[in-house]
Amino acid sequence: MTVVNKSQKLAVEIGVRLFLFVFFYISDDATPYFRKIQPEEFWLYRFPRTPSFYPGYLLWITILGVPTIVATVYFIKHRDKTDWQQAILGVVLSIYLTASVTNCIKLAVGRPRPDFLERCFPDGKISNDLKCTGNAADIIQGYKSFPSGHSSCNCIFQFRICCTIHSRKMSVFYIKRQRSCL
Image 1 (tube, one colour):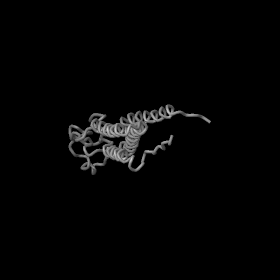
Image 2: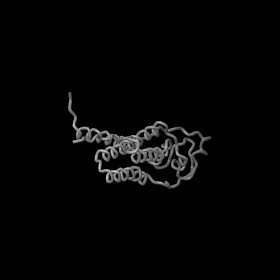
Image 3: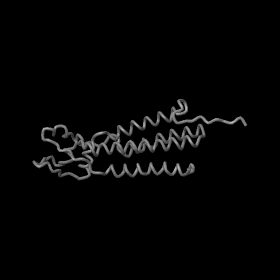
Image 4: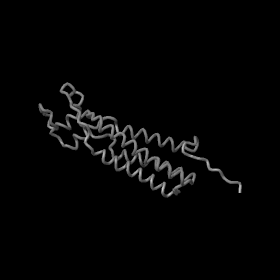
């Protein structure tokens, strides 16, 4: 029988999260399925390109920072290092797992964004052979419309906040420790 101590378990937990981070990072830049757009569908993808209302860097600060702050506030209040550690590990696992699954679906579906034609043909002249003339990175990101990464990350973010706040009330991730009478 193999004895596994807490530091080995923690190393495995961190290793899984690092793997998910690397997988997400690689899949975020991967080339998706290039869905052929028929001329009768052009009206769906002719919207003008607008800047993001909530940019990606701000999304990552929010979905990683806020749950960490909430867990830290609970740690300061209850002084339970194990609960804090589990909360942080749970936040990182849930966010990178969700982001990785979302990226895999985006790569398989290849749905164009509403501003795809502006990404593909920045000069506004659509060629007969439909070969894109725009920036390759913009075109690749233009095929990653569905599902929304912002929505899926926001959903898991709110779930983790709720679990952290209610963990002690509902014993979601909290095992009440027995105190000895000695």
